[in-house]
Amino acid sequence: MASKWDWETGEGVSHIDDPAEVDAAFERGEWPLGSAVIGLAFNGSLEEASPRIVRAMQLPDVAQRGFAFTAAGAAARINGRLTPELYAALRAEGLKSIAEYAIKDTLAFVPFRQLPPRFKWWKVVSEVRNKLESWWLRSGETVEEAWRALRRRR
Image (tube, rainbow, N blue to C red; front, side, top):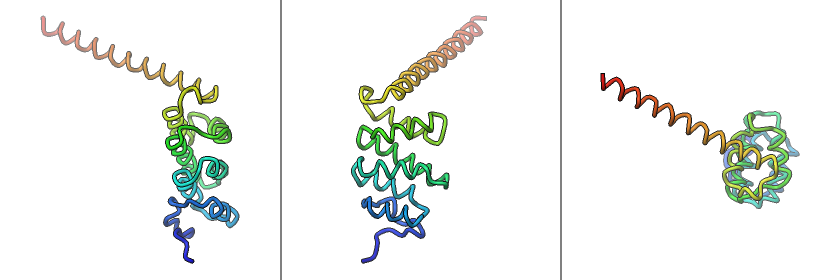
């Protein structure tokens, strides 16, 4: 039976739904594993996909590692939660890293009460930072409008 995905070109691996096939690809050292774990995040259970996503986060190819972090973000979006090992892998990378968007997806799509303490802290800090930035930008607009009004009075 012909496979639906082509490991040599990467064609179709983002639609993979078989964890055993991904495990076999890891053993063979296939290169599009980051793309494959995106498929698992969308098509498999979180529990099946999680260890494979974490493993793909350690790949030497930076692009494929980036796809693995994309898979983690997709898992957070789809499931509204992550596994402890995914939280640990994201925390190890940190916010200002290749994991930035996966962490932001996690903060946006996982309920606050279900977040681990470090992620709760990141959520609070980002919300406060966003609010302060909003106030700063609005104050600049207010000062600019006042300046224009004063110049019209002259």
